[in-house]
Length: 279
Ligand code: AMP
Image 1 (cartoon, rainbow, N blue to C red):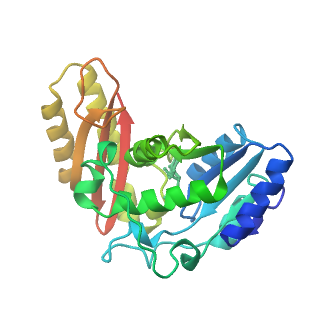
Image 2: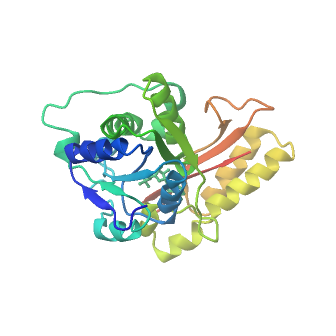
């Protein structure tokens, strides 16, 4: 078990560290993040620990998953604090550079279908191909046995699970439950963009998901419930990108009698928040 995590700043150091741990018979877990860590990330790291002897947290703000008009340059970067938070929790913190991940001439793209269809993709068409490239690279560079991904980014979890399966990457993807503030707001590195007035409004997202779930359980028609939920957010001043009830496994249309998932993305001022809830 680690005390201070060791910083690994390029793929060569990562491979050497993993080789050394493998020689000791260790199972390896990876928790990919973009840093600005919070309790949600730390819960994933703890979960990783229960599946492996060596835990690697990667921190990489991946330019390929941001469109030019998005928040790549202002995304919070807090490495020193992240390292402190990971004290005693992670063995290694892998922080590759952009040049390590995307060397000059990098020209591979991944086309995604299935769970990547619609929802986020309708509003951020570049997003999952960027995620898929970086996650594939992190899986191959680390050779990890397991990787933990948060249900907070539910479509991403499904896309990554499908990607590993389709590409025969020998890694098990483990979902981690969403960690929330006491008022229900899902922890997110982007919550720090919210003004205090916006922060007071933000819990409406989770409250609305909860009400929608109750209405669905009570037998209300799905389309009506989604429309009402969208209206509740719009009335509270949010701009809704999508509010949708889907099959929880495939993210295709909801199938009665099968697990469902309500997924939402909405803007609160200049901040885009996403959340989801199973039913
Ligand atoms: P991020 O760095 O925020 O893009 O996310 C890194 C990982 O942490 C992803 O697998 C996210 O789904 C997960 N994550 C983010 N927020 C939460 C949360 N509130 N609870 C649990 N996992 C989370």
